[in-house]
Image 1 (cartoon, rainbow, N blue to C red):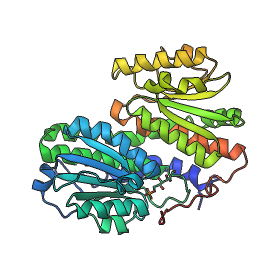
Image 2 (cartoon, rainbow, N blue to C red; image 1 turned 90 degrees about the vertical axis):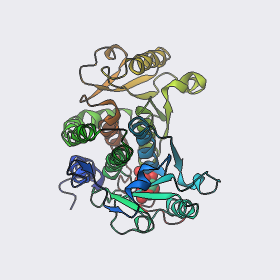
Image 3 (cartoon, rainbow, N blue to C red; image 1 turned 30 degrees about the vertical axis):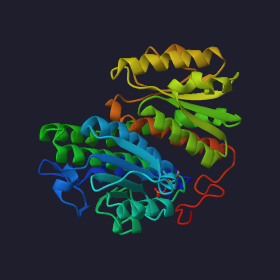
Image 4 (spheres, rainbow, N blue to C red; image 1 turned 135 degrees about the horizontal axis):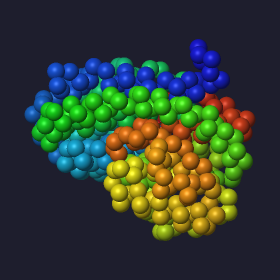
Length: 368
Ligand code: F6R
């Protein structure tokens, strides 16, 4: 059942190319992005003037990634909210608000309550869910299923990647409805998504190097993660994986925040994982991160750099370099997250913990 893997989580990490391909399949047909269920009119989708993404944990991080894509593609304001905060505030919602509820299980209590609250305020709700017929999709106006397959490991891996892909599809569906992207542009973005399973497969070939690194840093007291733009939610996800699996103190930061506090944490030998944007994307993002890495390295950090293959500028500042394939900037989280999953699992394994069943955690959080 674990298919020769020591843990379900490692099997599920390996299944990510397939999970992505299955999530994309069937969602683009006749030149259009297709949802699985749509109980709202195309007109209603076109009239959306604000998007909230509500979710918990890793699903929330997938929403943070989506914000960059949806704002860019649809020219719509996007707020990403922890479901547990959203539901106890008084968020401003109306008929023209689209609430995207992202949940692997489709049963997460806070996310479900956020959906109910949104619908009471007349907002439309679109569920992104991995579980057919779960409560959240049942109570939503539209549904896009991720087809990651059942996830046994408590820590989300393939479901997370599938959530990111599905959220991009939601963004493209909105862009298509609103006309902010021409049909040929939507088709081109979809084709770029279709190239991602192969890119993720390529990252999986670096697993041995990452595991070796994990064993070497397994006795660290803490690990920091830095990123910018879409690399920021990846940093948050890397830190969450390490907390939940290795019970290690880990924090993710927006690299631009370093000087506003976190740089005080840097001390000799502290591992800091940096998610580098593509040097071929927004040049300013790349150069800002290079200077961030040089600053923390000068203060003694042990820099672990996830960078695009062929990114030579970053080499002098990388104590450890993990290469990922070149992909479009917005899609990079689909490849840059993978080494962080492997790293966390290997550190946990080295420390003697059960990678599939971390202490105190349940796969589906149906109570608050
Ligand atoms: C982290 C993890 C959790 C879930 C969160 C939401 O690895 O698995 O943070 O992402 O509990 O769960 P769903 O997506 O089922 O609503």
